Image (cartoon, rainbow, N blue to C red; front, top):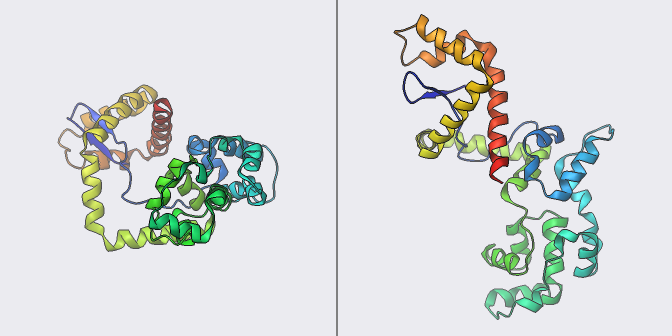
Length: 275
């Protein structure tokens, strides 16, 4: 547990800055998601997760499995209107041929693979029904990259999965989670100085310092016994400076788990309040 301070009289509980790349967690279960990341899920998936958690099952399905099962009916739909009847969240999606008037080389390439009249349905099937990445879909359509697709998805109003939700989907799957973990470990091992510099920059940013201050004030309210213990420890070791916080945590390991729990709750509540 890292502790920062603005001065000796105002110790700061740190708001840990984000890591430079997505670090795959080892246990992204439905219980973890419900407790810590529930707000990132689409409304339909929130209801699905709650229903599954209220039932009994031999092996808990992953979030990715649940998403694919939930949106599987899209793959059998024959028209965009049929999708809208089953999934009202797509009611604002437009037919591509009704809104796209461009005759660029990219759209000529797309039409070599699929007609504009069928494009909206195709994109919903691939993105939401099959969880294909934008790069994978672009390749299917003969495009070099996903930049054209980004514009197209916005133009025909297909809802975005969102990066955070996509990360949860990937990391909830054991195989994908392991792949992400190995990539992150390899990157971190190959770029140690970049990691140090990135975290140092984030830690010293005004945003991080403000979050530290806010969390600290709330933490003292929630854990007055921690504040007292830290004050007592400072009086007992008046000459201890640079190694004060490490020495404190080494001497009071009983606080570590509780601090992590409270800090997570406060940070999560802060995000919810800003929504």
